[in-house]
Each structure stands twice: as structure tokens, then as C-alpha cells.
Image 1: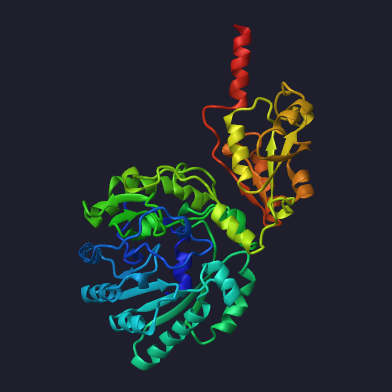
Image 2 (image 1 turned 90 degrees about the vertical axis):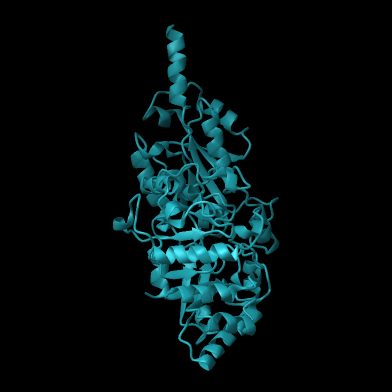
Length: 485
């Protein structure tokens, strides 16, 4: 299986895999020897990580390697949220894995610290493949994306890896991966030119909200060619992700330990993998019942606060969206307009509303929309509302006067029918935000059409969770009940 096939397998539809107790993984075992990193990639949550940096206890790591091997695992990678070449005894872990019997041991590195001495050490210890993560094929863009001007150094180190392979005669693979953003997606061919003959394979991945920690990916970095609205994830069923503290996580990019399901300092790897917390998360994945978890943001492109699965292992008790760091970097590089200027069309966010009886659900929707850009409320006219429900209490003019005063709303325009197509084509928004309540009921057909229309220009539909326990319909029912009493 080549690298591209491995990448695609992580989100492929694998129905035979989905159960509460899947077979113990034979591959896809990632061990985070350290969560420290010397780069600050634009799309990576490491730049805003609050978790303390540290290194895994070697005795624990060796024990977990043996446990996984005894359970049938034959491949292991020594990286996750950190840079593996920051670990002084990295070669010892590779050697230990090979001594145990692992058939495939691999690394992913930004390459800036992969000096000739370190390369020789890991290769001589038995490394089977090394992958350089190079997220732009030229120096200026590389420095912008990586946050470090190491492009030429990385090229030199990559050249040495090739030189040492020829010299030592060992049969190991050399790969390059490029995480593409909307600023680099046009550079694929340049990779082939710049790195010709320096890798066995170059694989591209479009940037996404890995681990759920970077929802700003969808608003600020997502490739124009990426129209994904749902991302299947196989990690809870086919991947072992161990943090440097010795915790078992759902996700290998668990920057704040918010997806921990077991403490492997206290229970065995087998107990953690088949434990009740892991099984509960598998059930939630199978039913797409992920609200309140970081996984929801990654799988459903959602923008909602999340809480840790096991509170005692995370310093953060609620993860709230904040795109300040990424936005500032984009502004400094000249990729975003000045905040005093009107927001460009690509950042327009369309929010359809009746807003007759305002409640917390409306505010939640508008707050979510404001995080994506300039909010344009499509306010249903009285006639449009009457076409599928009762005539509103307030007139269009009255409702408009109220909505215009809500923080974050830039403009209110009339929505003259229950079908959004006319306004979507007129204003061409980058995002359409609507609560999940329209997935069923009188607007289900409207939703289906709106998604299709938005996809024509790469627009995205965002669906914050409908606020349970409060709705205009319920409030109206209470009013009528009181009027009768």
C-alpha cells in the first residue's frame, strides 16, 4: 500500500470496520514521544496550544510498544502533535520497535532538525520510511505557512536523506507531503519541479480542521476546490493514538488532551481500546451523535463549543472558537482586507431568519455566523412566512428594526420566499448558516436545494446545533395557552 492509499483509507467508507469492538489495529499506531514543535504552521493548533510540553517516559513507551505488538500491531509511527527530531533518544525508540518485531516503523517531520547526524542515527536503527512535511514549494510562501524560514535547510536535509540511502544501501522510503491551503493549492506542479528525484512519492492533502481544534480552517484557509460538508473518520475504529503523557486518545492531533478515553499509566492498552468510554465514542461516531465534542467540528464542519471527554486530563474545560492568531498572520501577510474596509464578498455569510419572537437560539446562530465573516440576514417577509406557517406577530419593518440592532449583523435584506435560491444567487455568499432544525420538516427540501446552489461556487453550509428546549413555535404555543386561560 503506497502513501496515497494510506491517506485515503483514513476517511474511506469501511462498513465492516464499524462496531463497538472492532479488531485491534494491525497498523496506524502513533506514539507521541513529545508534543513540542519548533514550527508554527498556519493551519496547526500547536501555535495556540495551552497544554504543557513534555516527553514520554521511555519505560512506558517500551511497555506500550510490547503490548500493542502482542495484540497484533505491526506498524508504528513516532510522531503526533510534535516534531520527533526534538527527542534526543529518538533512535532508541526505533531500535526498540524493530527489536520487538515491528515490520514498519516510520516518522513524519518538518525536516528542519533532520541533520545528517540525526538522519544516520534513525536510519541505522531500522527506520522504514521518513516523510517530510513541506507545505509550500518555495521559500517565501514556506516561511508564511510554517512560521519559520527553514525552506533551504529542509531541502538540504532532504537531499542528504537521499544521499545516505544511496550510501548505506538500506531500503527505506522517502516521502513528501504537502498540506494545501487556498493560498497554495495552485502550486502542485511546482512541487514536482522543485523536488524532482528527491522523494519516492509526493502526496497532497487539502487542509481540514484536524482534531476539531482549528475551525478557522473552514473560514480562512480551506481550499477553493474543497466542497466537503461531512468528513468520515475511521480513527476510533482503526487507530491507536497515545499522547506523551501516556493517555489513549481518539485522535492523534489531540493538542489539548480533550479526546482522552483512557490513562495507560493505570490500565492496559487492551483495556483502554475496548473500554466503555472508547465504545461510547464509537457509538457516537456511528450515529453521528458528536455534539459537544471536538470531533463534531472535524466531522461535520461545525462551529460549536466543546468539552473534554475526560475533564481531569485536559487543562481546558471548554474549547471556544478563536481565530485571532490565524487572522492576524493573514492580515500581516496582506491576505485579508483591512478591518476598516468592507468585508470582501468571499467572506459574506447569509443567515435566513423570521425573527418574530427572538430567543437565545437566534443569538447563537448569529454569533456563529459572525465568526465566519460579514453577516447578511435574509429576513422573511410577512408573505414568505405566511406561505408555510402563521402570519408573524410583528411586521417585516418591525422585525427588521430589531434584527439590525443585534451585534454582529451587518445588513438585513428581504427574503421573499421560503426558497433561498434567489437571494443566494443575488448575494453569492461564501457561507450559509442555518440551525439543524431544517434537516426535517417544511424546510427539508429548501435545505437540499440550498446546499446544491452553494456548492456551485464552492460555498459552504454551516449548521450549528438547534438550541433545544426553546423555539418560536413553543413560545407562541405558551402565549396562546395563557390567552385561553
